Image 1 (cartoon, helix red, strand yellow):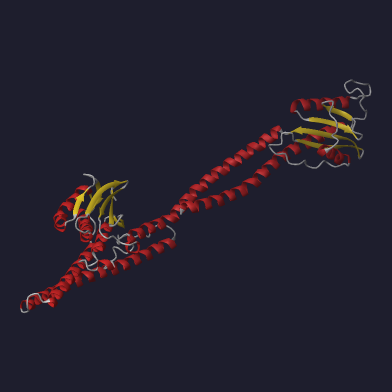
Image 2 (tube, helix red, strand yellow):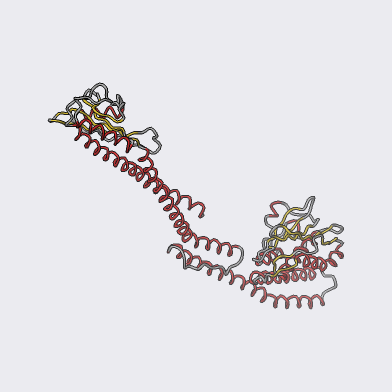
Length: 471
């Protein structure tokens, strides 16, 4: 859930930071350019103050001194030259007819198009030129033209024009942008860290609830949630979950207690009833079919009560997990069942590895294997094999019991292990329909699983899986 929530928060935070950073970058560029423009306006005003008292036009040869060239014109030219040499900014004073009064470099002319020409025209009208368009760091050829009128006796007699390079200004803008980007990255890192903490704070109770729900679903009914972390709504949900789990556990405990008590209490009258049946059979002729049928049903009822009591105890007992040699345990159970298999004419054999360890409750696993092997021997005809194998499978240890009985259909495989369920084809085989249910309950308490699959060409394969690592 965090992987879905974090990208959404990060995208939103990135959008907010971009919405703040882009305008700030534009403002930074505008401020830097405005500083340059204001500085050029001041320089142009100073040159205009020198040029407004120059009355003599320079001669056609701009490089030579003429008698008509007065001292102020020489001073203006010297100032423009030093200005160009010092700052690298081209500047010039031009008469209304665009002929130069003084310029540095000397071949500087009034632009005939673009912003320079527009600025010159505005200065001729007695106005300072408008601010030029914004120069960005990638505008290598961008320049800033500024024009200011030279006014004498209320008339515009000349125009001061400056044409500034933008390399240093673009470098300052780029430096400012880098600082903004660094600040944005730092803010993004802080925001991501805060998002991690926030999502962790919000989702931690959800993960705990999910883990507790999984524990309860797998049979660990004592799982609860500490309602001390997270938002108030999730803490309230945790308390409600604990109350629900308490009620469910109480109901299941009452159900188990009822089954156990009922099984236990019914055994005494059933035992008395079976005893009276045996006494009654002594007074009837030998081989009476009705007495034999009643005796059989009574024993079947006693077996059902025993299985119900075992099921109630299995659901109530906690698993005692130990590091167990599963292969040795399986081989031992095969040896224990071999006499019965030989009596039925079934070839029961262990074919797995000699030693494979896993974490299991030895008693519960032994009982489960007994139920599975007993079930296989019941349905395997004489002369057919029943194979038991133990193999490691990654993080699990699998115990497979494969028989050559009639097997089950696909729809029957989905129901096997349900309480009191038996295939319609096997109703004549002794049993209560609770053996595999007890097996599943015993295995689930220790984190083990049981699965069923066909064993081609006919038969059933039962796979018991236990973890190899400690829970």
